[in-house]
Image (cartoon, rainbow, N blue to C red; front, side):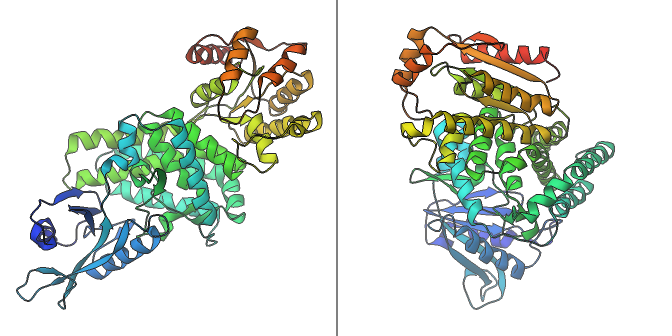
Length: 510
């Protein structure tokens, strides 16, 4: 609800002379802010609104919000957030910066940077690469590790508070039908009840922290070649004090909604690899559904305030429908992909995982990454030969089976990626599925030795340490009792993933 006329202040900030410039000022209008681009600076003013989740109804509240915005965002992008400017009433009744008159508003002064650096622009230009999204996931892990732990309520009460805000916002909107809103709210409450024990355990373990709160593509930028967070939630501590995976879920939902499921799955997997937060994976579809519902009612609010209804209504509807889809049920399953070095197991796993299970897709349990984690090194670090003894490898495969069972027990799906050339290792991963009574599909990728030699010899970077010498030893061993489905690894990745999905359908519901 708009509570104050800010037109005089907007006119002041749209006037180039207010900044000592003759160049036009560009204005960007969002649902809770105005942003004025003047020269190499940007000035962000809170809209005078009072909403269920934000109160900017007085100049003093808007000033406090600006001060907090600079404080919080200064931790991640201090070179962008320069300070706060007060807007006061001048002697002639006009507006001026930092005068002696009555406070009428405030703005955050920021260093302006090109829109082409923001991740939603990079996404639109097709510039979100595998490597960039991996670095982004790692950056978010580091941010969450340093975020303050907050113990105020239980984990289920915390996310229940978010649902309370959503319900209040939907009640004030006329974009969606009353019956469908009631149905969605009921589905959310049922999901919350199912997940409550896990949410509470995670809160007790310190997983609820003062996070970013608005972690989507428009609030990540590329500065000096590094992904950085900006524009966090400063106006509502309840919204920003959440489970770290709920914070991550906004980015995952945004990527999925924009048509980048492979990036959503990649970010999720790299985040969990780095954060060692396996138990929370099954919560992600629910968390993403809540994030989609937030975007639905925020977009609907803009329509209520006089936005262009057609395009915004379609956008709000797409988020609303996504939330409903993510609250659905898709049975867990386990797919194991084996094969000698060079058969493309990891590439196939990464192509398959976004298509298996509810968004953001399946968890990839990869032997190479588990081995590196055991030694406390980055996935790209090469390990010495002693790290590949039979005893170490047995530990790796036991860890893979244990992690898979943990996820399957909570209803998540898994793609396990390893050589699996030994019978006991295949039996262990199959047992993880049978113990949890979920469908299992075993895949054995194979290719001519010449193809494998060429691929392994050309490999650069990545978590695999396999060399042509390692491949030679693999080729010397006879793979026995292979009952898994054999697939030619020489085909396209898409065709191989399609073939695996077809086999999955034969082995139970997907």
